[in-house]
Picture: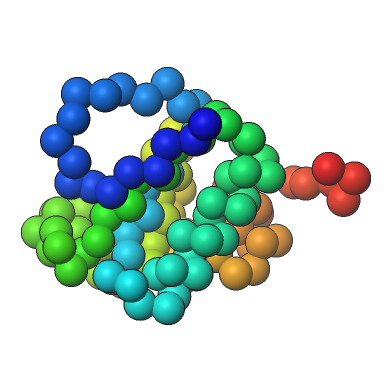
Length: 109
């Protein structure tokens, strides 16, 4: 089962997921909720159980967001596999998200 965690989280658990994303949100803002929903749906479609989404709420961790260069939310980083890819927005346009990730999906999938 995929792992979706809220960051910061004090744990020594190490994920074995191949596809790792970090989603920066602003609390329960509508676009933040939509971005998480869209990212989950895309990951389930593409990676089944081989993904992890770490959610960072910039309202709770503004210093982390600032240190990592986040100036707008929602924003997702694909951490793994490399290279790191940044996508800003609610991820509503699946075709644009797939192109940004360097992926192509057949309609038969």
